[in-house]
Length: 122
Image (cartoon, rainbow, N blue to C red; front, top):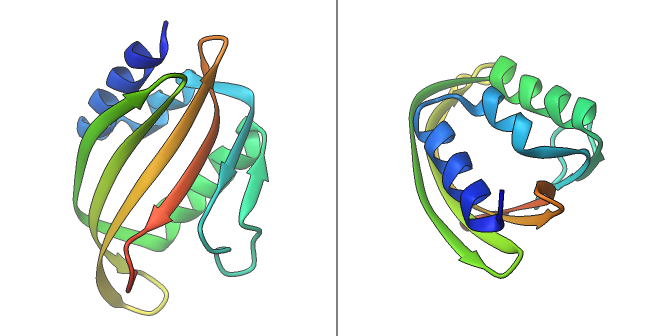
């Protein structure tokens, strides 16, 4: 698949709530970079297993009330996707609305890097 195909597939799977299935689009050597380090973790994780663990932490610690996905916006071997969430952080009970953009880089038909950017106040 080319970058546009991967971008469209990722967005469609996320819109359907099939984020776990989207991991098939990722390289085994994926690098995932958050804008800020999650509590007790690093900003950057490497490898598909580490990415899946990070995703599981998110699911385990957040009740998702609603989610929306916008995009993709492709440019060469990269594309951006927007995410909006209404979630409750389970440990604190705090309900928040989050907005983030993710920049994905594609090489050899797989996503090799994802970087997250958060709206101020998130």
